[in-house]
Image 1 (cartoon, helix red, strand yellow):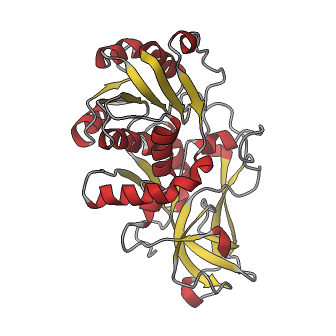
Image 2 (image 1 turned 30 degrees about the vertical axis):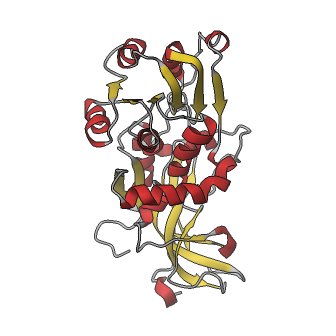
Length: 346
């Protein structure tokens, strides 16, 4: 196949080679070569240009029931990606279109045209549709406004605040009129980034001292809304600082994803005495909010009111490095893999 930009018969694809125990290792993954797929009726072939690595992918590497099927051994991984259609058997999605879809972790993807969404990369880069205008952005927006029901003049705490979702949740809180926005992160550089670049009112490095003590110092008036990306000790510390009728939106628990033993939250009785609401959520339950989110976020971006940070890793051969780096907190903002190797034309 060569028409439309498919210049090679080789498609490199990442598979899950073994189910990780604890923190994943490179040996748990395998990069294989396959033939570039051909489209069937109603299908398209996409050359992926950027792909996402997300904390939730770690959970799918375990063979346990969940809200989405686990990855299968010796089968391709998947996840969000944006690329260019290079072959099409669909009148709705032509060759040359840029599309968002769910078959990342490979150079070329073949899928039904109905499982793609055409995006405009002239108004925003492809990576934006994996971050600020994509799933992480909608997660932050819906979690803060629809799950936690944040109101103006409330005190907000965001854990994992320098990551893809947390960095946006904190900025949305500020733009929607929060009284104070406090964040946690894992390095002094990230703490400075939250305060100096993103406009957080305060932030702390959870590695530098007792979390409960640091959070207490930064929240003298308590916490009304906690956007939780971390779980574990930070959730426990936040419950001590919650105000009456506070709300906790549980988005993730990255502190627990690689831990052999769960962290036992010891103060759940505070949910009763403080009448705190604690609710987990999935972004897939809030797709109906996507249009409102995109409109508001696009406006903030045009006006320069939202700052976007992305951490890029180049080359499909380094996709696992990017994933493991994201789990270690090496990214600021969204971790993105540019699939072309350095020097290779996309």
